Image (cartoon, rainbow over all chains, first blue to last red; front, side, top):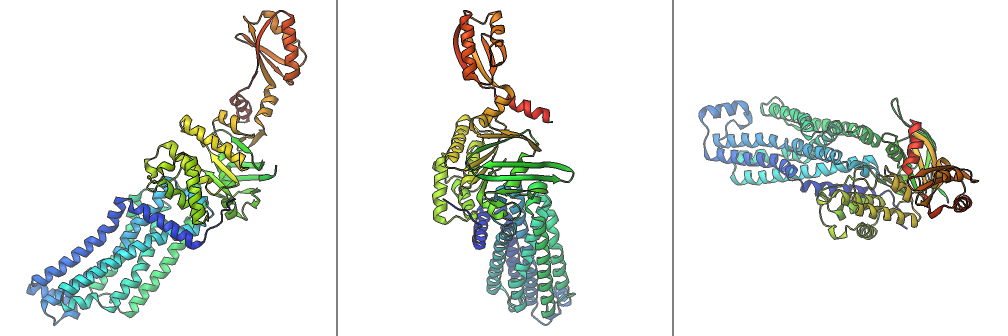
Length: 269
Length: 309
């Protein structure tokens, strides 16, 4: 006689993640939407650095760069341009963990809603919190990996074709820490926001439009950083990390509150 | 037989709407229990309550020895549910779908593999185990969903409209599977609008419309409402005074003519039928055959459920 039991948490996590990834890989549109932003940002970044290495900037451009980024004053104009471009694109890399996992997380919940697969899933002895956590992890891991891989390729490309200023910019310890620590935190925020939104809407496009708002503060911070209004020093780095951790916890708890067994079955349509 | 499912005053409200109103019920181990009622009667809500998917507003219930609201995870491990929609992962193969659920029911890898093979073979889907479920017909998906519900061999299996939309062959497979489950001692809680199917499969039937209207065996429900009905075929056809003659026979509750037959209702057919045959033969009638006539369950259903509206 077979006795079913509540499965081990690791088994739940592994099983749900494996299924989510297996299904996501079978969805060409989702794969394309996941890979497109990092590929575009990566290629644009490499081409921009390569172009700056080939074509020297005009005197007017050089003066504008010196005014915008005092740190590069005194450098060779070509090097200064490359350094500035490399830094700009690092900020764009921080957009990848906000855009990519949002789509995956939205598909993960709205896809199950429309396919009516949630009721059999909720009928298992698995806990709702475990299902939610597994879905978060399943959406977070690919986005973080994609960002890290894109950053690794960017590092290699800048190292091969870029100036010393460009290499210094992309290998700055704070940027490496930002990529290692802030990217997973931003990804989690985006994922749980995606799940939270998906509990309230049934259309992937609507959910993406609402979720897309998460990009705004990142872009704002990026512009502030480039314009010198905000400097990524140790203090601001720790502050950003702490704010993101708090936001991650709050949004996860909100998503957990919305992701109730009875709500899902009775109120979700 | 032991009780495997019981409810006392089980109630579920959604705001002002009362979906289930004070349900008292006992279901026995190893029986096929029919739960019949019109659309919107609260059958699916009741199923969800018993499967610990939603919480009751009032009342108590015990499923497979576990109290609702206290041991919900154990209840979910001990029951299986076939939902209205198959709800399968379309991009996964038949085997991957079942293996996924086997893992979530805590089955070991070896047990899961054995169970997946067993149920896919039982449902005639083993040859297509590697194909994505998206390529399956409606009937195949329904059989997959039934296999998923039974995969962990639950003590109680809740089936919501298991044969809806199936071709006769697939419906037969499902009915045979239900009979097999009963033979294994499992309890099947069957919601269906197919009254013929309920009549054939169910040991007991509950008529439900937000609350329990009636509960009994199909035979007892018929007998109480209609008595037991026998058809007497006369050749060439009943004469005008045959009807009056049969009406006067002891034990006959009612008699009417239907084409070439007399339809006789009585409480004790073995004794009464012999008297009826004797009376007809003595009056010179030719009795060609005598057969038991089952009142369709549909008539019983309409007579019980409609007035309860």
